[in-house]
Image (cartoon, rainbow, N blue to C red; front, side, top):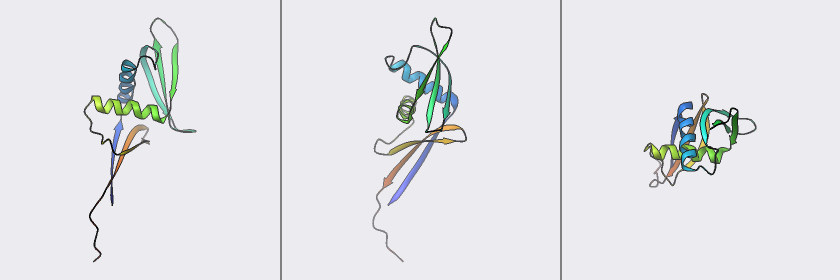
Length: 116
């Protein structure tokens, strides 16, 4: 068996755009407003913080998202931008030099290998 591994690394601007895209498609899940800032933390687990400036408000609303939600943002961004992601693959998140990355792994069955 062979394992294929692919990694899609997102700049901070791409993550911010992924959050904006998700907010536009799911207005019931996020407050309406301008996404001002996004950043990640790793302790106690990988999380994404988002600051949103709500329309007509002067203070910023801060939201925290877990790995499942972060993955949903990034997968939606990939679909919108025609970045192929195999449906049957395993997907998980990592930080790569401070940037979020979506890691895709897929098991590939091979013919029986013969020993020489």
